[in-house]
Length: 324
Image (cartoon, rainbow, N blue to C red; front, side, top):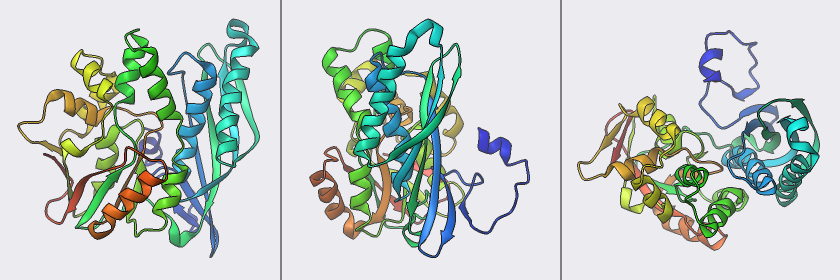
């Protein structure tokens, strides 16, 4: 939304801006020299689970993910906090910040400060700065005909979080989805640097199809998603069948439905899962088909156990996502 507003405003031109707000990308990138580019990102949101420590872990993992999706290495971070101190007290905030720091340590990223305000609604996140070699920068554009599409985490966290708020998720399901959202994309990012990856993004609020639409829009390609190959949390299918689909999934579908062509046998449940807004989702990347199986095996060996080849890039068509 912010980028669409800024598109009407003429920014200060700078040839060193490699990726700016005019791109639908994960972060901004600024060239420092021939070997180094600066990546900057920011993300924050309201609590999605009850446990404050886990909320901190998830928020930090989510913010760090934008750096990983572009092939970068995060180095510094700053906290962003809006908090009703008089209502909630210090202990909850301390737990959230501790959870965030745990993930920053895992990412070998230094917390150097932050900013907080009093607010009736609690929000937490981070701004993160990282570095990448300009020649090894991944953006969400670059798919080539014949590429395979690879996804590193299963879908369904938005649907399950909706069920959690409704009090229907079991403790086991809550633990499962919490650990998934708190899992860094660090290892997956490191692995993909060894392969000829053509484009990459992380799956967050726009859902799989929303982010994929950004990768396809304005190109001369179309993509095909094999729905049976997409990794999905089984609990998400159960809760979606019960109607626990977040409003964000319906907004995502409304915004991109003209680009999506569903085969007649695709169920409304699977359709909703494909549009489900994710928190700290996996990486979606493209690479030549001849490298896809090897890359998938490597990703699984390095901890991304749900990694799957979910489709392909076609040379015919334009701005179309086929779901079969």
